Length: 140
Image 1 (cartoon, rainbow, N blue to C red):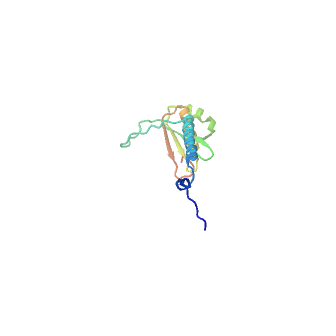
Image 2 (cartoon, rainbow, N blue to C red):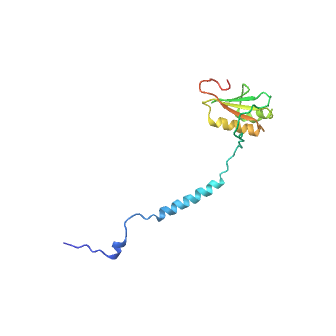
Image 3 (cartoon, one colour):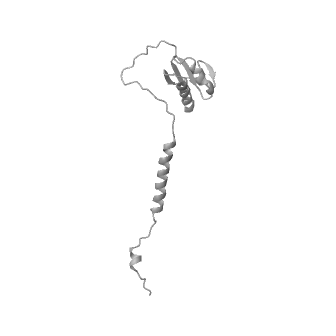
């Protein structure tokens, strides 16, 4: 029968995975993502919200211009407008209120494009409205 010899070195050494290299990699990744996040600039649209309180009817008597968003097109006062021509079409009457009506199946990017075009056209009186799923075409 052979006896296993236990030395002081084998008794104090613990088996396991050395976590130091993994921690180094995680630390480097954290630094990388922190630096990369500083270089990303996002375009922001300011959103002015009304203060909480009772609803007050608007005193503006101008007929609002309607922009209907469907999955395939932009319709400004019933006429189809290309996305590239939208800022110019909206800039024709910048003081007139704008109501953006979004159909339920329109992509969210269409709303973002419309709001960006309105901001480029200098529009400040903008309201959004979502059509209900059973209402048919946007704007009805």
